[in-house]
Length: 203
Length: 304
Image (tube, rainbow over all chains, first blue to last red; front, top):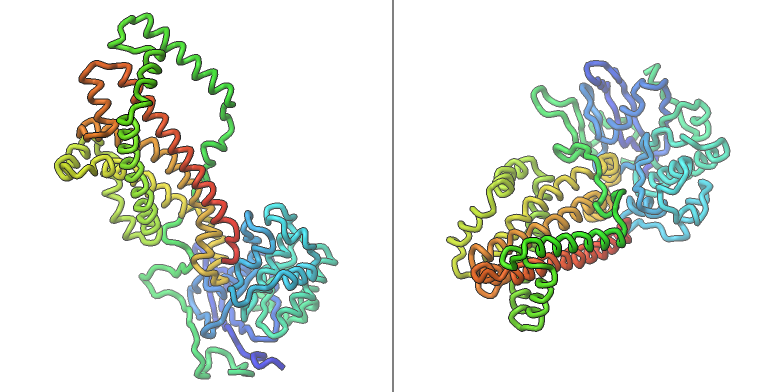
């Protein structure tokens, strides 16, 4: 067992968030623990992406608190792919890796192959990739970055069933000892990631 | 605290960063957005805009206007008022083999381009400062506005008083005219950087140098290129104007002034043509150098 396993990296305590006076999140409490993946579900507009942005520190709660363990590094797949168009898929991944943790060509090719992308596709500019290929590149970027907590906002958008399974298997393997939060609409994704479900509607 | 699953709210001694609701009256927390950034439409470089004319069409147009000029000078029939293109060419051929011509060209080019390069450095520096801090932007706005709106002649007269005999008149004036152009374009370019990508880079804690190469440089370069093209034209116009008013010894401006005194219209137009050619040559050279620098900067932007 990894020594980090079971350690709480981030905790939301009674978090409330409003946009223009309309409440989006009300009294949400959630802990993110190493080795215990969480799937956040809920209908559109219920605040799933807001929850992720609060965790990343991109938004501030109106009330409640977001507690983050000192030194925790995050990586994320955002709602949009946020790839740098003039860089290749491989360079988009390298962009977020520090020199000390830069994957070599073979490791990178292996990771791309694990999510169903070829060496040729890996060298293509992000702009030239299809929607599904871009999504998988964004996913690889989040998984290969040296992060303690990985937050994924609908990472399987644009992927067919087979690509979805391959991506989920790779996520589960890459995040076995990390904290993982995955926002999804598909109830089956939690099973694929062996994650507990956190329903925002119930919360 | 390995194995700890007691939650961060409990006091386990581990350092924790707390992000709570902002206090009343305090500005809301917005950590990864540059202050005052607003999305700006990216303007294509002039050379890439649709509707450009072909080389042949440009040559034909130039030939047409030369014919119009020749016809006009023949109609007027007075060399003093309007020398013909043929007479200007003759004057040019007279000037070109002389050492004085090359000395004058080198004298003016060194000073005017020197001022331009200084303005590029200062404009880029101030542009970065203004993008980084609202205070810096507020502080820099009045002088930049003043430089842009005050007539160049006023600056030339002031510079004559301040820099009498130092030979720095055209350096100072070309610097001053180019500075606000570069400053405003660099600032606009930085603000045109994609905010969602900047947010992504902040989440992944990408080092600043890598962000500058991969995110800011592609956003700023089209603006910087436009600023260089505009600035090179401006620096020659204002620099030569300063030399004419200040009668800088050994400069192109002094040659223009002498041609005016002697009513040598052909020589005046010949020097004018030389200024235009020098300006175009420097613009070409500079934009080519910038293109090379761009390629080097963008290559390997991901992991250096």
